[in-house]
Length: 279
Image 1 (cartoon, rainbow, N blue to C red):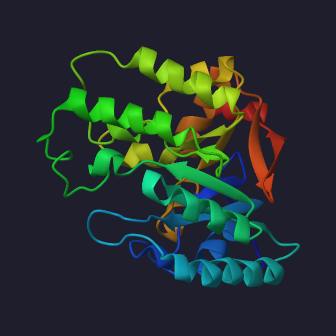
Image 2 (image 1 turned 90 degrees about the vertical axis):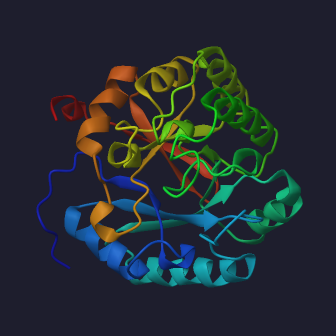
Image 3 (image 1 turned 90 degrees about the horizontal axis):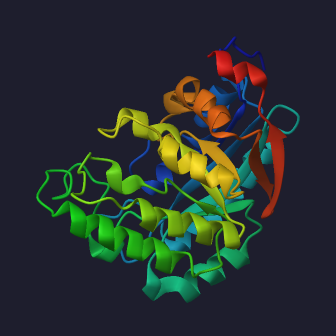
């Protein structure tokens, strides 16, 4: 396969979705071909698994997990020597399904498991059709329930990465008080549990207009010894590696020297090139 020239400066994307989540387009192989053409060396499918979602289903079902896992394994073999393909899940935290989620993650040889919050306290903080997106929810309350849910999520042990840690800011609903100390406690807990935090570039296409996490949180994560991954949260092939040019210099400025990658739940690091500073 011929690779097209690209200006990406870090050839890893650890957050790519598939049509199984019901709100992404194109086949798995279309994402792979796009990544190869751009010069990526490693990608990870990290598709949604959301149980008990209050609304329309934007996730694969537990019954579809074997199909998803085996499809990626087939493609991994097909593209061996061309690009490294990893497979994981982005699991929405739901305290009522912890046992089932633990069982699912242990039933397959996933490379990495991410955990996220889209419905803290059964409140939708991610959909453009939600009350939160329209400014119809009290910001202090939403931030409070989000932090509380993050803390409860971190009591679990079935995941390796915290995805888009400050997603609650997506629609720009700023609280009237600072939640800095609350996030500091969350970062400290992540550090104690030796989890990684995802740098998710999709925030640049949202009203937040910045990555998840913010530069302030990213810097504090680095000072606390928290490792990071990087991902575009691509829901279509064209979004792979989106806005890396904006976020990579910030990652270096925050003090990071490497990005974490995973193989069957074991973490290793890839050095960041110094050239990222000049993007």
